Structure formats: C-alpha cells, structure tokens
Image (tube, rainbow, N blue to C red; front, side, top):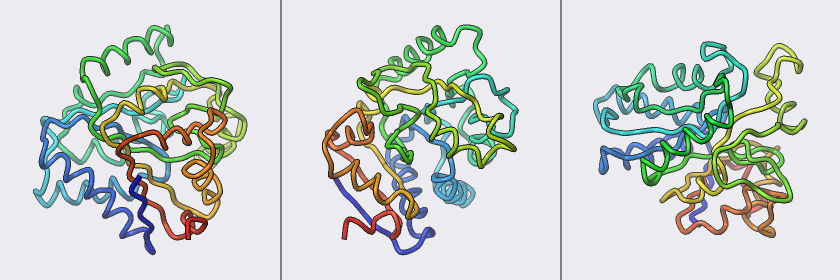
Length: 242
C-alpha cells in the first residue's frame, strides 16, 4: 500500500490526475475503471486540462464505470452517464463506444449485469480502477453484508447511502433505491487501484478500512489484499494515520 496525504485539494487532484494520465501516456490502450460522486470531480478537471494542453489522448483507451442508478433516465441530472459526460467525456477524445456504463434503464437488470460482465471479460483486465469510499465502507455500490458478490449485480442501497447521496437530489424521495454495481471481485482484479478519500467525515472509515480487520462488513477493507493499492487522502481524511 502506498498512502499519500496532501495539505491541499489542488495537490491531491493533480496527483490523482497525473497517475491516470501517466498511465494513458505510457499505455494508450489502457482500460480505466472510473468512479463518480463528489470525490473525483477535481481529478477529472485536471485530466481535462492535460488533454487540452495536448499532453494526453484517449482515443485508444477504454473505460468502465463502477455503477449506475436503476431507473434514472440517461439525461437525468444525477445519472452517472450524465455525470461522466458533464465532468469528463464531453471534453476529451475518448470514443463514446469505448466508454462503458451499466444501463440502469435496462428492461432486464440481471441480463444487463451479465452483459456488462461479458464486456469486462473481453477487456481482460482493468489497468487502473479509481475508487471513492462510502461512509459505511462501501466501494462502488457494494454495501456491507455477510457476503459480497464478485460480479456486476443489482443492489438495494442502504438508507445511509441514500441519505449521503440525497444532497444531489431535491428530496430524499427522489434518490433511487437500487443500483447496478461492479462487484468487489472485479474491482480487486484491477492491476492498480487508486483510492481517493477526502473530508473529516471519512477519517474513521478510511482508517478502519485500511488498518482494521478484513471483513465484508466493511467492503473497502478487502482492498488491503490488493498488491498495488495507492491511497490519496486530504489532511482531514488522513488525520488518524499520523
């Protein structure tokens, strides 16, 4: 595990973006696992800046997003397809046919999960998986449970997860109750995992995830088993590691 703490978000974002763009510069056909939420926004902004400066190109790369809400139209302000378009895809040359996100509006969600897993199998292996961290230790939308599912699957979102995401919606009632998510097994198969955590409210859970017992009650704790884990923390999230 390589754990780095930053005294400013600007430096953290630049570091995260540099790791991703550096990979694509050395391996133009890289397979990227991408995340959504508040945490990666600054990293995506820095990636766009690098692209605009002509430092990196994505035309031969492929991406797979971790998850998508069930039941939100693609053009809904809070769909993860719209999020990725707004923060990254609209500003770089990654072909949309190579930018994969689970279809949360599929008529058969279980069949959609199988389709997504087949695409992942065809890609062979994700070179770098970007992750945030939920307050209850979830990664992707893999919620704490007595057992975790390896492949892409439909998940019922925990109340605490829906409350955490309610800030993006007009009311709690509008927050979807289910999502499609890449499984922990798929996440752990990535060659490299880049975990980014910010904020004092995440200090306890990230410390527990990276130093506590490995248990499915804290899905992120399974990251301790990964051979190439890079963790980027702001000073507030990293305060318990000092």
